[in-house]
Length: 345
Image 1 (cartoon, helix red, strand yellow):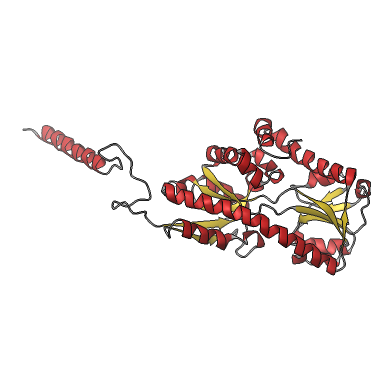
Image 2 (cartoon, rainbow, N blue to C red):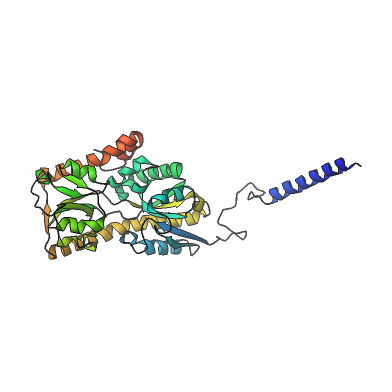
């Protein structure tokens, strides 16, 4: 036998062994069933550790229910899924977290829908929804499907459902026309609304707002309905304007890469935990907002409640302006999202 023929036979032998090894390592059972990705050969669920990367630093108030979520997942999964802190923006910058989620670099992202609009423009309108209605109408599944398609991820929960926004001013407001000519600190989330009231807008870091109010550079600000006291703004502003508007859209997302590691039971445990913290967040914020307002009033601020046609026009402007950018950026999905909400104006 010549050398070339011998080498050919040896090559065939090596390839055959490789094919046998690949077949033996398949997850496909003789009966054609695929083994659950989180089950061991004995049929017991394997333990999984999932690390959370957040758009905010550890201990931030927007993470108030992190420990509750972790505990619920642990209990509902019979201890087989552990949720651990993986770092805040010091590890992955806030606006880069969306790409890390998409590429499976992180297991869970505790972030905001707003931070993901570059990939999914319709998410601009998530602040106009509430989680309870979205789950009842099928809107939750609609948003989850978009996340699956665009960001290789799964929508777990709206963790700040029930946390709204307010405007706060130095000057008394008796009608919407009183906003005209004022300068108000705002973020892109509600800037169009503030401008529709006839006010000018300044985007500035929260840390700069105290001095700006003190010097009358600005005459008001928008902020979530809990957190004014974190900056001491009650010392340099006078009025809490009601009604509240929008919802702070913090969300818990899981990468598909992490999702595929879990059994069906473990996935159910995570989704059930997410739904429960949404419901608990609504109750928490009802009390927290009332407590904050009472404290602000004890510090000398006054509550101005717009009523009747003034209140109706105020909210109409808020939601019309809120929907406008989403409808312009992605009319098809924005129109569908409107069908799942109470605010289909």
